Image (cartoon, rainbow, N blue to C red):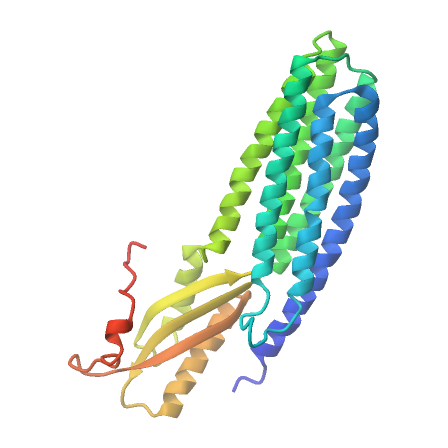
Length: 322
């Protein structure tokens, strides 16, 4: 009706975004891997638990690319009779794996810091430790900016969260500088203290990232998304009311369904054309919208209930406060 297919464009965009996501993961994995290896050598030579904690976290951050890589690869598969919605949810599950990996790295960093508190050792090669901290910051910040940018481009909450994780890691790398400076000034316990602060910072990252993934797994969306879709639907001539609008994220794709009311005197074809106009408007309102299902109800006299036969099966209507 409009001379172009949003369905075909949606499939092409999904494939392109998967390829771009995998490309971003390859680059970030290489960057963080080189950074972490450099830090590991200095941590082993110097005995800095702060740098070791940061190195462990950087390694875990690099490894979070693996589950995301798998998720992006699976998302290219077409839906089938068992997985009728496709494999987009696997990306959200990969985000859960990322949260668990970050949490485990926090536990390991905390254990190493407490051990160093109980059994303090002198810090060697303090200047090298400071250099490694600066390298860690540069590597993490570069990867973070890259991941967040690509994640926003392709609509991947997991990749954006992973980028913010790397960004916070860059700040903790700078904290290692304080530990090394403290050792140079004759305060060896500053180093394990910095290790504990890094552990706390990692746990805060876990909380924020877990909240993002909780929203995805619980099909939560920004209320502004719902508002924009509803406004677009109501603006179509012939739409008398918009009811039960729902939306959810499935990986990088947004799905929606709604009921609209049209004049009961319209023909089936006219009603269908109005529904298609609504769908077309919604696709342009939300670029990440992959599918939208629209049920058309006839609007007539108040005594007529188009759903009287199935009313007792329906869920109670959503409150306006929600």
